[in-house]
Length: 314
Image (cartoon, rainbow, N blue to C red; front, side, top):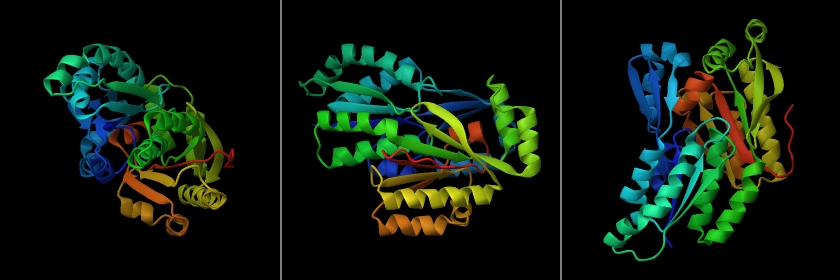
């Protein structure tokens, strides 16, 4: 059984990991004025964007996921031939239309795949499961890496489905933003009034950074800490405590809205790296997706893991 895995470009996985494990990407496109940028998880292209004049207007960007037709064409042209079963794990359906588009496309794919497979010499059925990761950024990556791990271990389809169904509600993502003014501008552009001008101004004046928790399709502040670096340090220490307690999967994912050298210099990060190594936890770090940085701003940091012991960061 040839099993394929598909994610969208909002999933913060390293490009090398995506290539090594033959993960297929559904790009998200950003339009900023006359500039059109497709997010293909190219870290150097993303960093080049950050240093461009176009990035100054990123809060005004319009992001567009792969359409129903584009998803259908990708599957019928390639994936139904290359694989017998595909797991398509999308960014949270509460934050993007990727899941809805993939679900709609799946009906046409399952109706129309037979001629393409027969022409390629495959007479067996093709199956597709679209899964809402209920999360975003590095937290979406946690579910994707578990799908890869289970596939590579040779588990059958039912075992993989059941494991992912249990895992997804227990994936915890955390975001520490640098620039609350940017987040307010971005939220306002999208019609989201959750970040008020007063809160942004007060937080920036006092250098208060919210730590935002994402889980099961919901996002909410879980703590407010003075200073970006102290907030990250507290979060890294919390992650170390969860590693010691035992994670649900042997993976911890981190993304950063800039050069990874800056991430490595954050206080407490070296200790987190050592803790992962000591406990056999794979630490996957990457430059944040273009899609992610457009939504939360340059210099933000996200961290995620799976934990079924109801951890609380505060």
